[in-house]
Structures are given as C-alpha cells and as structure tokens.
Image (cartoon, rainbow, N blue to C red; front, side, top):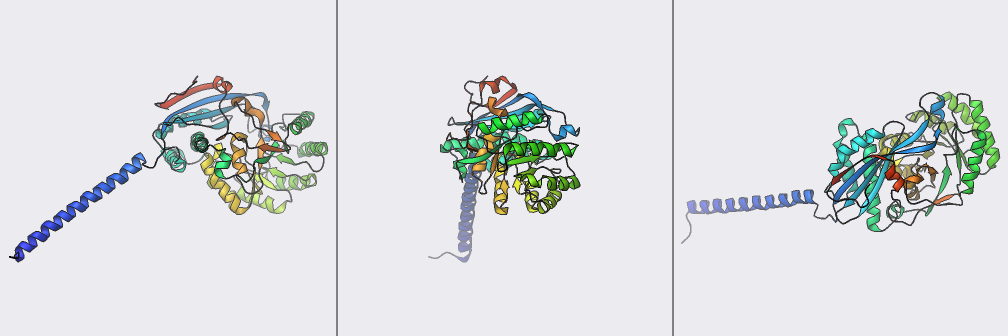
Length: 423
C-alpha cells in the first residue's frame, strides 16, 4: 500500500533533513581538516623547535672614514653590531643567519628580533616566504622596511641556510647557479682615512690575495683631491685593471655630472652612489649622460625601493644588501627584477651571503670583498685569479666562531631544544 500525500511529504522532509545534516557534518569535517592542515601543516617535513638570537659587537682594527665623515654627516666607524640568528628544527638541523648595523641601530634590531622570535616556533622551516610575511606583519605598525625588516633578515637568512643544508647543497646550487665563482673587488683598503700611499699598499696586497678589482672612496669637499687619488691608483694598476669609485651619496646633481665627466678618462668600471640613495631620477639622468656605468642601491631597505631604481633605469649595476632589505627572500625578488631589466648586480658587503646570490644571478655580477668579518666565522672564502670561489659546503657554508661568542653582549633562546656548545 502506497504512502499518502501527507506521508510522502513527511518522508521527503525527513530525507531532506538527513541529507542536510549529513552535508553539514561532512562540510564541518572538511573544514576541520582544512583548518587542521593550516595549523599543523600535514605536508610539513619538520618543525622549528628553537631559536637563539645574539647581539655581538665586532671592533675594527682602525677607525674608518668615507665622504660622509668628511662632510660632517657621520662620525668615523670603529665597530659593527651584529644580530645572529640560530634556528634548530625538531629533526636536528640548524641554520645560521645574520644582520648588521654600522654605527647606530644594532640594539634596536636585537630588540625587535626578541619580540618576533617566538612566532617562529612550530613553523615548518621550509615555508620561508610565508614565514617572512608572518614576521613582517607582526611588526607592521613600525613599518615594512628599515629596522623592522632588518631584524627579520637574520631569521630569513638562517632559514635559507637551513633549507640548503637539508638538500645537502651550497645555497647557490639550491637557487640554481650560473657559475661556480664570481668576480670580486676589494673596498676595505680604499677608504679616505688612508693616505694614498696606504691605499696603494693595500691595493697590492689585495691583488696578491687573488682580488680582481679595486674600489676607492671619493666625495671629498675638494674634488681635486679625489681626482689626484684616482689618477694615482689608475696609474698604479695600469689601464686594464678594474677600478671603481664610491662617493657615498655626497655629491649633488651638478657636481656628479662634472665629476663623472672628469672621471671618464680613467675608464672606471662604475661610479657608486654619486647622489642621495633615494634620488632615482637623478641617478637616471647620470646614467643617460655619462659613459661610465652608475651603481647604487646599498642603502635601500626594501625590494620596492630597488624596483624604483630599476623602473627609472637609474643603474647599470644594482647593489642590494640582503641583511638591509630584509633577507634573501626579498633579495630574490630584486634579482628577478634586475634580470628582467638586464642590469648587472654587485651586492653590498656581507660576502658570505652575497657570493651565493651573485653566483645565481644571470648577468655577470661582482661580489664585494671585505675581510673585516672573517673573525666571526670558522671558515674562509677563497679568492683566485680575481674571482671568489663558491664553497662546496652545504648551506651558506659558515659557522660562528668562538670569537663571535666572545664578542656577544646579549643572547636569548626561544623554544625547547638546547644548543650544543652554547656560551
């Protein structure tokens, strides 16, 4: 006997309710699994168990002066502050990264790092871009460039070091190297605080150690002194040896044009920071007017600021600094923009990091040699025939020395795992 119309409606209603309830239950289960995956990372292969940060001061053997000192804008530099980040995972892997500050700012970087370090615990260390975004938004109210992102840089660099170590590869190879060595030039012997006789002696020592280019500082109030120093170094090196000059932002536009033309007979590889770091239009005018290539970018603190230089065609050589722009993650964005625009690259300072990034850059880069940081690490980089050799060691290929521990003024740990050999 069939159901009545009323009975059919009741059965249909009951079936509809069952379907709705089942659908809601299934949806809830799917949502719960999705939320769980977001929280736990079901595809994750490891977790960050602990983080240690340290604030260390590296004293320089002699005080250093460039044009900013001679124009009264800064005091001579006598030390460099470092922010070290050591990240250990549940599987026992460890990555090391660093940021730095010349003159003021080191304590501020360390203080910000202390605030955001706990946000790393429990994260999958392979999710570097997501972690960078998480950390930058943790401190977004104080900005997404400058000191806040420079604190992030130490963590970001440590994560890239760790990722390459997991793969058993040098970072350059993990990124995809174009070369196994990079042309290198020395800066540390050419400061304005050194007499021209000392500069020439330093030049000879650098070349004997396998350096392939020499950069000297210019930008003195009396430009005739600059020209005499450049002439002396060019004569000493010969016509074909790569020579660069660096004005450290101390020229105005008219002086830069005049000096650029006066320097053209010396066949320089580039003129660095002739104008204020943020004067993209002025640098673009120089790049159009002068035969000598223009280089700048080291003082910028974000990928967006470098994008402006590239957009305006302000540079022949872009000079990003990974610790200053927030780490390797934003640095890779600058590399992509630079490769697309076909500009060359010469990263600033931090050769232990930048050697790997330069090796992975398409357009014939340079890397800057500074021996200042060598006491901080147990390993040394090799220079042969004018080039710096990419080390075969996994990751960035360096570890902190006992001297770095001795220079440490403050340190703090977050998470559960203990670091072996901790001071």
